Image 1 (tube, one colour):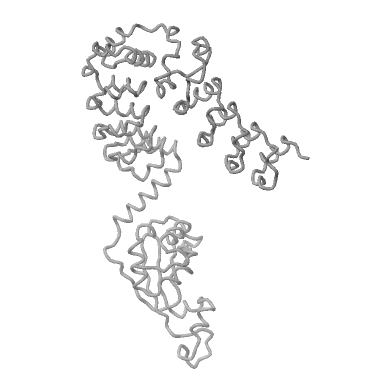
Image 2 (tube, rainbow, N blue to C red):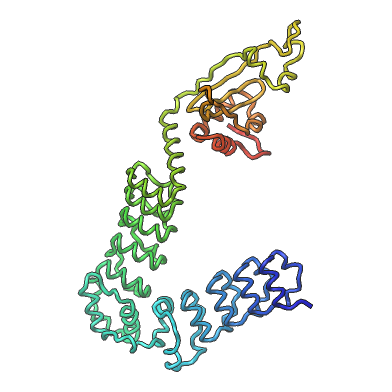
Length: 442
């Protein structure tokens, strides 16, 4: 019979084999190790086997399993381990089940600042006497007299605790005297001060600092107060607020700072605002943005030079052209009405073609194919090298006239004619075409 440790070792290497084994022999610790490495095994887990210790350890790394947790299994030590790194789970903690002995709480290594931010009701359990804080009257005086308010988070938490115990102390504070910076510091340490906050006093820098620490206050924010530097700083840390941003406020330096950390915003950038030094610095940190930038500049150039009308040139294939005609096309054309009475190996009937060239890309429509070529350089004889796009077979199944090709090119002009190589040309055409089994509409 297989041992639990043997099975755990097998599944660590090959989690896809889970359905082939009897998993009932696995213990809680085994499930912790497996879920830590392979969260996809959750569908097989016997959650009842996981005790408080392993729940605490698992949720530190895999908080998505919180809905499966049996919270009553966690003892005081388990909770302290969990909340030291995941204070957001403090809302699940019923501390009344545990010891009221203050001596026990003093022995615990808790991140009290993070914990009391979400559970201020546990303030009475913190050993405040070990911090040597000033009395609450002194804290209140400093709060009102200093422009920056209070920078000491412990003092802010202690102040909130004392105001909860002694509401009459409120009379000693004129909340209207607090600056936006003071409110930002106050709320960042203890969000429950929000009931007293005078939001209009917060300026752009105050909002960016507050939202970094407490993004839940986004609905209170006056976004117009943030300048380009504020937006650049905030989105580097909290990119979820991008939908609120006025991108026009960012200058070249702001964009450089933002894209070094969050390159996904490249499509929002006004690249003309970055000078050569800012671009060089950015490309050194994010080399992949150089290709994006060059491709974008190419598209902008195509847009500027795009002709008002696509002028298709028309001509017949010459006999020299026909010498290189694919056999399949020759067979198509080799019937009596396309031939004369000579014994030539190729038809003499002239084949019509329309063609258009722009930005090193050549497009042709003839009675057989729709073709795209891109010039990739010159050969040793200084002749242009033209490479054909491999997706032309697909094109011939959806485009049946020069009029349809004309509309297709007009609709996707920038994407097609900004291609810099054969791969980009193929990609641009494929992206413009409908799915394999769909019909195309212009």
